[in-house]
Amino acid sequence: MVVRREKKVRKYRGSRTHGWGKRGQHRDRGSQGKRAVGQHKEKWSWVVKYAPDWYGKHGFHNPTTKQINAITIRKLNDMIIAGQIQVKEETGRKVVDLNEYGIDKLIGRGRPVMPLVIKVKSASKGAQEAVKGAGGEIVLTPGA
Image (cartoon, rainbow, N blue to C red; front, side, top):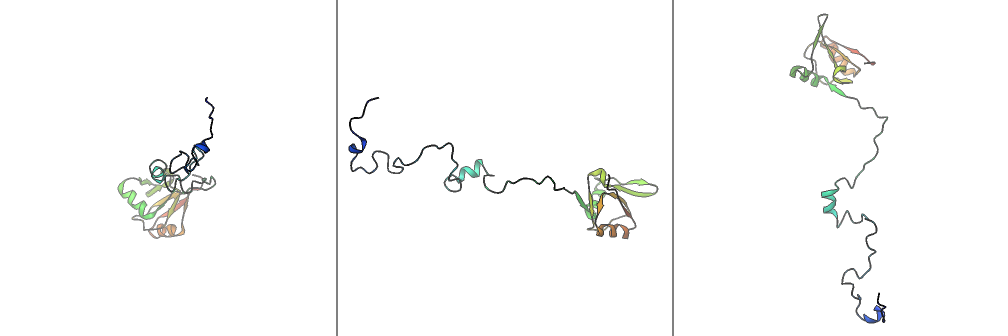
């Protein structure tokens, strides 16, 4: 390397930027190892296109929370009519086993179209009253 005889400062006296341009003036610190700064301002279009989940909550899922798969009586009627849930005949009564379909709870919104014996893990009070009012019954099977 050639030794510079004069300092750059002396060469550029009175020039303000000393050859480093009109914007940065040699003030930035370089790459800094992929610092993700300015994503909400000047790099917003990049965030929208490549990292849509950059902002917002991404917390943990509580493993002790139990997911309950519930169905209303109205939805049950629609599924029976559509043939998605089969009604079986046992000792002259129409039986629906919701445990076979992965349904944990019956909710009492709507009225049953026919008297049914419904086997399910749990049911709301409104569902029990509605099914009894239609001439059926709910058999709670907690172990199923």
